[in-house]
Length: 133
Image 1 (cartoon, rainbow, N blue to C red):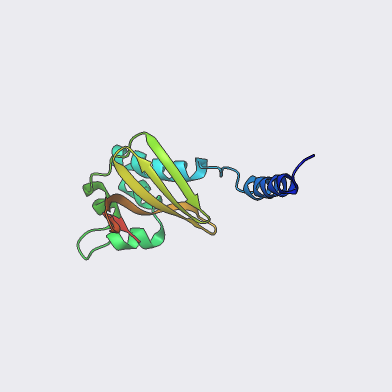
Image 2: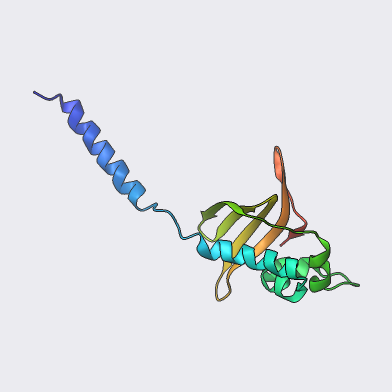
């Protein structure tokens, strides 16, 4: 004869399985494509294409009185590299490529755009980023 606790345990496990089934792996391709577009444009020396991969706020953040986004983005030394990790939280994402970390945002009508790039972790503090929205 089975213990009544066994039935409850089975129900809890089934409930957990049902809840986690909705958390299936998200498609990371569009996030990776957006970050790759930025790094590829920088490597080609195409500042306009690199800025097009940025969110409008991030691109505006690179504008100064003397320099435009296409000029500034090429000066930052963003290199990228093999994609090591992609994490997505709704309309926000973090991607690690080579030594670079980028943060992305999904914008209505624009898709995934880089909101911060050239980011380095600082223990106990927010990331320090060369490009920020």
